[in-house]
Length: 324
Length: 256
Image 1 (cartoon, one colour):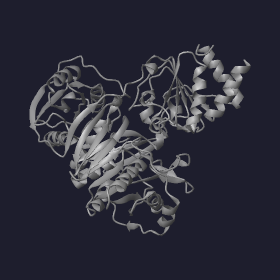
Image 2 (cartoon, rainbow over the protein chains, first blue to last red):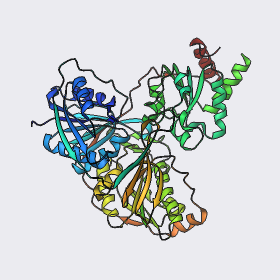
Image 3 (cartoon, rainbow over the protein chains, first blue to last red):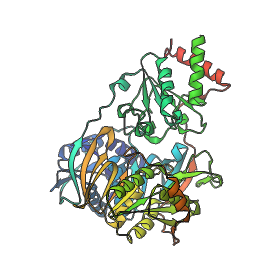
Image 4 (cartoon, each protein chain N blue to C red):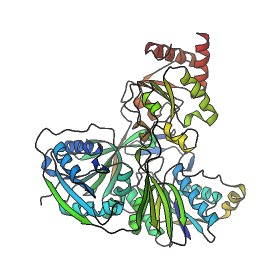
């Protein structure tokens, strides 16, 4: 079999492909002009349907690995499958999603392959010498670092939800079917919970007023609620740290591990703007950010920026409205 | 039981951080105040809770960083950790997680640990790699993004819940020794107690200097993120800002 320049590791939700797979194929085609040099790897207990869909939608060749001996895919099995593919296809880059699944196997995979691992990638560009550079957000989103891998292969974990998916107009790719037998190892699945419902309130809101750590304390959420009450059809939400501290219920969390929302107006109150939060609200219609730190990353994704202490600002806003 | 917790010192805020003159990395002002990475506090708290319920449990902490990273071990002592290991390393340039994991793994291999905890990521670099890499270096199983844990010491296993996207959780059973990376919200980390803090001042820290492991990636350039939207900054006094926001919200029919 010929070498491949790029391997894409697909992600499934049960037996269906997640959209991030098509975001990765979009990236791979920007990195490599000849699609014959790209191979998409799909691993699962029943991956046949997903493999056909992937070959049709991307036009790329697909390595379809059916795993037997277990009903639950552990990170150990995923690492074994990708290591085996990497040894045979000798890629320069292995693209995986920076998801809870991708970060579960990606770093260990890199260690096994003596490879660089660049995670939470939010952009791919070329340097002056033409080499590929991978951009990632650091210091709470204040800066982007451009990283260059010094190894072949390099494991690249790409942040989902930031890029368009692609649609192939041409012929479907070939499917290479393989089987892999594994044994139940040191980690065993005992159950799946899907109990935490997302909030339909956030899905329907015209305005979302979202609070972050900058509100200071739980009592100050009252000010956020009073602020939201000024706007008909508004709902209150929060960033992850508030939910972790128990200030708001999980169903009000906005971000990659909570709700992904897209209201006509999003007002970020005391939110610093981590990549995880932005992935949950970046497509909102009009974004207003109020934060005392003029360097807060949230201002990079805002239409209107107000540098001020959030509670003091809300008090003044309420006073102004009473006078009006 | 022997438990190791990976901890990292991070800045309290990034306000005093700048791009270095070469543009190749960040530079922190000498007056920067530091703290323990928030996610590592959850990891350490989880270890200390096991120590409280299982007699003869030892909780060690390990960190890699410059001289001032010792403060984070003192903090861990104040919370109740027994031993601290400090791998001295210059962090004025980008530290590759594979190199960090190789050095931590080397030390962890000496300790005969049943459980190794790490935070899911560091607040400053946000890479989510070190814990999983240490597991691989040691040839141990690993569960990342743990949000609940029950220990069955007699059976030599832990029952954990792992958080995925959209509120989905997987319940897993893992044999020890195992590496667990801990997600925020699993517990409420304790504050250091005064008596432990006082004791911590006299306590030894094992300090290790050694040759750095070569990195596998290079930070080529640091730049400010591009503005993805208009980013109009409302200028003036607070009253001016209030008036302008009210005007815009009325214009957009958000407010009557």
